[in-house]
Image (cartoon, rainbow, N blue to C red; front, side):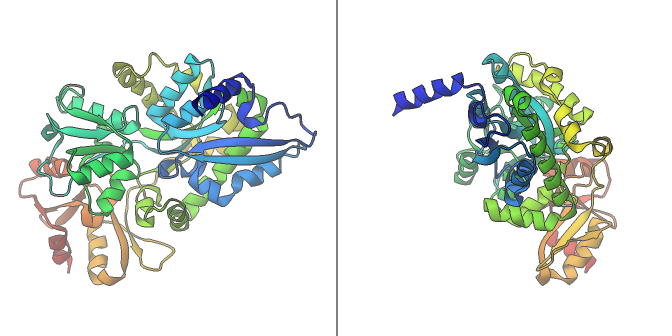
Length: 447
């Protein structure tokens, strides 16, 4: 079996258009299969994966190309970006989606193996870095990054969450190589390790920190938005595929834009669709993908995201995961510009919605938005039996979090939520009389 697999791989590497149906010519009645690699539970990529697949927009766009070719889509689901890159450089995946650090590895591996890839669009992003979070056990005595010195920390090496961990430790004065015992684990394995007590903390990407926190299996130790450095996920395509079938890639990007508009105009329905497809709680999906969620979805390749990507290169080089990566050569936005036409400039200039507190009432297809966390608390206190989920933005970073899992601070009459104890303590240190209170106390104060 192993010899057969190796032989098959070797044949694939010799095919110029492998995954996308070989040498089919327009109008000859051939069937072409387009292979898309995605991460169903990495819900920052849903507009190029889970949601897009469930809506069927890509298939509809392909049917309208009108070149006489019948197109079929082969959707392949993975837990992380690394296997997508492996399949792309083997010529087996045409289009893939992954986070910023895996995108750089994708670029490096493509160049190294003479299978160049190109970043063609963005899925979701957070301009401060809030997509990655470090969590610890609910009953852990850890309260800040400095407490991680000498501890076991699980992450997926080469992922965006690993990049956040490395940078955060450096800022805390801890050597990310020698100062902790790093466990290189898949997200699900790391989550199990945290529950079993075999690791002290877990640094992971969307949606794992929110999921574990929602389930009561973890609490936030470090809000990635404290980094104040953009993080994002994007779409990458094989260069030979893009050049040979630009109409197919443009069809994908048009469909991605449609899925993005669907998510932005119907966030609750979109969250429920993603939840149904992934098994994730819709409340967790909405935390990230909702109207004021941690992630903002827009296919435009924004300059500030590319600037952050260039800064990421040094982290991967230091970890010896890549050499130099020419980000400018890797990015190719001509296809998304053509696909979106005159709307591209507007999307490029768009900014994330302002942070806001939200309540998702039971049975509702829309959430209720409040001007302040205190107003939300007042509503929750009066409708405690009718609340499906309540969300509040961190008072300093703006990162949305579950209201009942946030760290609450009372400062005179003000009630302020924070994602992590350290951000709450930083506020307290600068405000005499401010102190941490429980969620129950916060609700009692507005009742």
